[in-house]
Length: 94
Image (cartoon, rainbow, N blue to C red; front, side, top):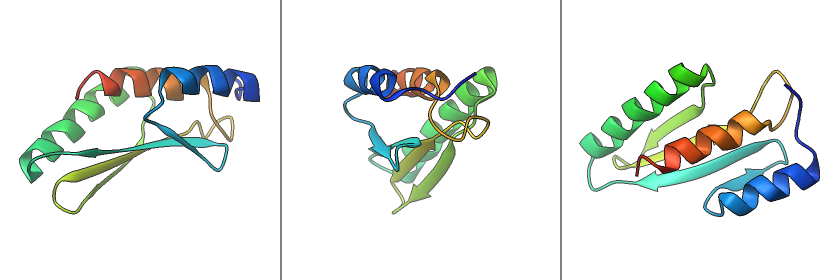
């Protein structure tokens, strides 16, 4: 697996306009839920995707109803196609 080029990042980013590229090496998105139980259920669903892909995001539950996810590929030191593929799968949950 290799780090994406700037052109590749741009193409993937166009498919995921609600995710933000941060520091040119990770993508982030915040999700908001009506309550803590909804946020926690979402985190568990994200965990199932992460386990199947063997690609684990940083997950932050904050403000009792918000979840921020950060994806990066540590092995490449930046973004890989796996980050964007996982983000697409996560978007289908909400």
